[in-house]
Image (cartoon, rainbow, N blue to C red):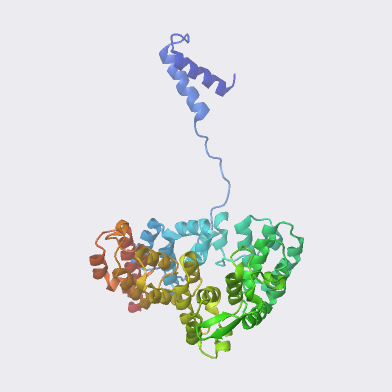
Length: 475
């Protein structure tokens, strides 16, 4: 009888009782105790006959001072990635590294969240790189380099998001070689989703040399492939697509006393587009009809098209396009290429006023951080709290001191929704400039008296700044 079979028999005897099992209680308990340990006790660890780890190398790295280390400990306890990135950035600027006691936690976070690796790598120091070489999962940090050479053939076998990320990394490392690979694979891939991923990878380091492949993709029968190629082509200001769209805008629109209007007996006097024009429009249904075709053409030219045609600057051109029956249509198209303008601010303001809902938020999310913040400040005078909060959530942080002060004024002047009454705006405290918010601490706590976790995070951000500012002053 095997050991486990004897154990099962002893358990059955215990269940029915010692008397019915033909034994005594003491004998049964002794048997259960002996068999239980034998059957389920932990095994002794195997004897490892390996040399001890080599000692950590000597290093001249300067560790963060106690105040900064204390803040890092609390940041790690909160598991706040934004704050952690901010701490690492300040430490890198101050040329200090994390304390050795925090290195395992930092390596663990970098392993679980690849997006944190550039920030974490900057504060590991020689000791952290030595520690990273001990565990295979931490090998990404062993050399202090966060980007590995991408095997393009292997990248194609990865699942969707990971494949696209790998192909874009390859584009950042070697744009020309990766373009050749993508062009060769484009014809070989049978599934539309695979061809779309290849085209999407071109967005990293996109340039004029990518135009031939994107033009080929415009003839793809799959809607997703065609529309992705068109989206990328529209960001190239000197492309053939831009020339074709400019010619259509000259033919199809004339400037009247009331703004731009459709020319009679021209291409936009009829609803349906000819095949050549349809090729340059999105197939997802958003650019159907006359309004959609005009918007598609406007989205395919840079703002310089309008300044040159009107003989004015960006301020004047944006004002001119804001007039007339097609103003909203034209500005919805221009919104897709606002950042190509010489002076993007008037275009961003005009487009934001013309857009609504998700289109508005998507445009703000695609602008440079400071421009997006200034645009929100400019156009939010009549917004309610929820719309302002949604727009601010699109702005990357940390915000500039000026944007923080202006957005604080906007929030403070608005009535809180019932569900947020007395609670400070989380996005303001998390992304606003810590020094500006610290200087306005009394105003913030008076306007929003409810104590929240966001206030604790702001207090920690203030301590973070103070810790590194104190170091700079003492040097």
